[in-house]
Length: 405
Image 1: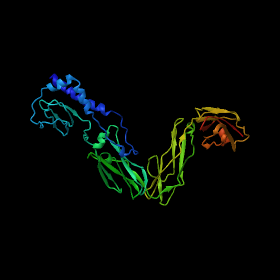
Image 2: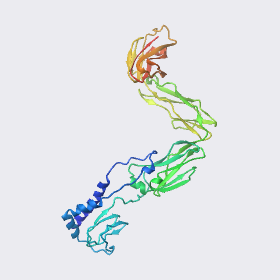
Image 3: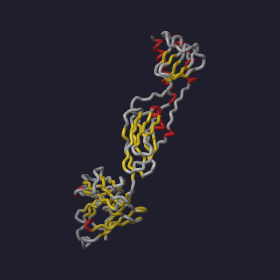
Image 4: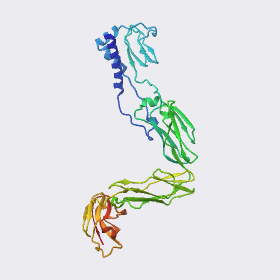
């Protein structure tokens, strides 16, 4: 019993030695930029090192040669001194007079009587996993033009090893593409490039290892282009204390096809050209998502500016007289403006908000650009300087600012 246990420990130690020899590391998830040609499986086994280790240990040689084993009716013919490499689902180790290394990519090993062979299960054996590989599939680019090449990729879950990828089968089905289906095994099945001659959304499905297919993220293929769209916000710094609402408006969209509508924040397609958002706390940020559609199945994504809320009840700074410097930091600040009601002798017209900075000054004051080098100015309404008005000042760097005629 002790001899059998010892032999089992020797086999386990040999297997562990293989994994040490092969090394270890972290396999990063695939993305659309991965090149299939870079994927490889490299396994190595230092056979001579294993032989030398056992031969240098008299106890190892003695224990292996003295292990009593049951008679097997499935023995292979006696072997020469050549070290065999066996690949099967069930292997038998022949009785050998010497002590060779047998490398086997097998899950079942039968050791006949009188065998003194050291049997190692090679880490290079590849076992096809059961069921589908965990992962997703997606196109690149996500929005394409007619005739443009679109590459579909399988993005494996981090739990899936490269060895599993190399053993897997991939069956792609492309709806409306230049290639209807694509089947491959291993790394060559990870990606496939196709093109489209019809506009609109197109779907793709992928089955791995013959399992039920998964649906990939669709690709949007555009026909007649939509250009000129602009999305603007009426208040880039809405005051929570005053209701905190900001309104975005889209305009200027043109196309050779008919514009059919706008989709705000992933909602339904409609003809509404505006969208609003109510802010509830200071420093909250929001920018709506917007896509414009036409009757040629084209969808154009339009970028909208970000708004960031302020709160007049939670001011960062206050200004109560003209030509008084206040030091403002980079970023967004709420400045409560409470100059005397008659400081400008009128409440109509504009005044100047100015700042000193190093180099080029960048920033906004209530959404208006602050421009200049070393000394930057912007005109603001006089009404924005009185009655505890919350002035939103966002600066690209720390500056010293003031308000004056």
